[in-house]
Length: 130
Image (cartoon, rainbow, N blue to C red; front, top):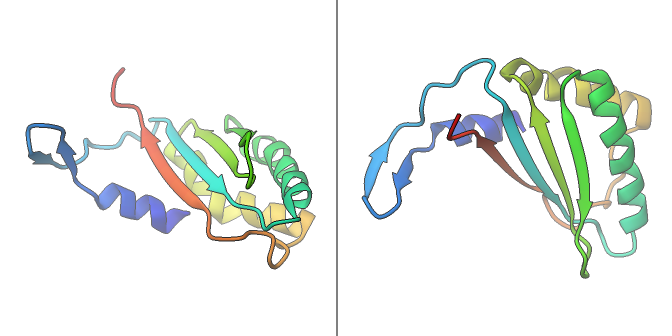
């Protein structure tokens, strides 16, 4: 997830209708980071994926204070899960791949092979207004 975040920061933004290109505003260390992840379980493994994600949703806030994880599921098939993650600071975001996710894998095992039908889609957001 860290390489995705770095790539997102390197992007420039086109202001709609004006064609103006500007660099992203400076990032404050205490600015919240929102991450939206779409996960695509393999057919027939939806319950297994849901159970693993439910463990993750409980584990992360307990091991990364101030972080919220909310799990959602699509209402139609094929099932898609959506994780809405809020990191209160850059430090909380940075600790996720370095310490929290490895600790989760140590406690709950590596992600079972073939659990996901395709790669996850990850998007990062920052507040644009105060």
